[in-house]
Image (cartoon, rainbow, N blue to C red; front, top):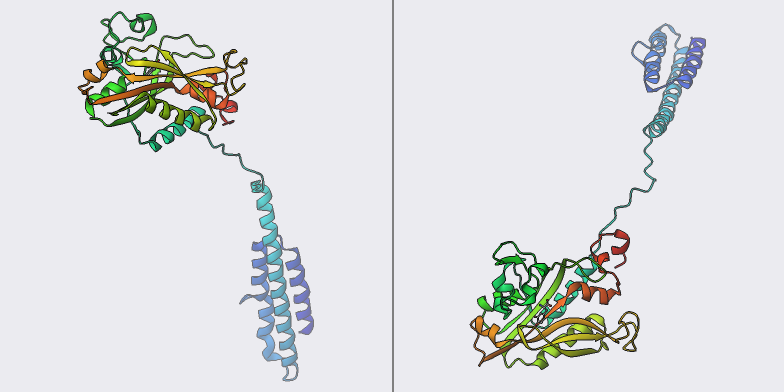
Length: 341
Ligand code: DAH
């Protein structure tokens, strides 16, 4: 019987060693150790042994059983590991390969400058107002003291919707001044950013659509000094504390007196260079004291109130701020350009 047990041991261990997969291993376990397995069969014949032999054979059978079990457990671990390796190879998913990078967008340079400007003005007590891009000529021109026959009302300058020239794409944000004054009582302190349209050919400094920020302050005792202080604050916050400004007399129908505001050239500091075309100064915006006719047209008592207004091109502001020389770059949506800001 001992010999039989040794044979079972040899055969079973060899079978375990050669098992190709977990299924084969399980049949080996059943064949040898199961209820009808060969080792179990031998053990069932123990009754025929002598009293001396029984414990020895019993001991041997138990040893062989645990050897086989141990071999099966070890082989099963080996096979599972191999199985995993094969799965990894066959599924070809390499989690260590870097993924496709997700590019995160950035604020457009004009949005950066607009947000800065809104921050500066709200810090001075201004609110942000909005107005329509499709406007009545009354608001774009007439109520802004720009009568019929003014060159700005010509068809070749302006996008009209109607034959009678009563509705158009606004050419300036100034009509928002009128909307605000018609609906709010002084004190008024607003800025109004938005798109405007003109029949301009596209070049490095022109586009048929561009952006302005309008400003309006109406209160008791407002003077040109308030205008200068406000615009100097804007310019110095945007371009640096030692930026110099120059207020030049000009004409706008809706302000009296009117001025244009230049900033000292950031490139040459006023010496005169290519950027400022030898001037030393760069024009930035138009402004003035709101014309009494405009105030009165909106029902504001000019004996009590006065006001100032200004309009600045956002493209121009942005180009100065980031030293961009061609306006078209702002509209092309070229990631290589936009990602620099
Ligand atoms: N609307 C003017 C333009 O488009 C700019 C401007 C000038 C706005 C003077 C104003 C102002 O409010 O007071 O050229």
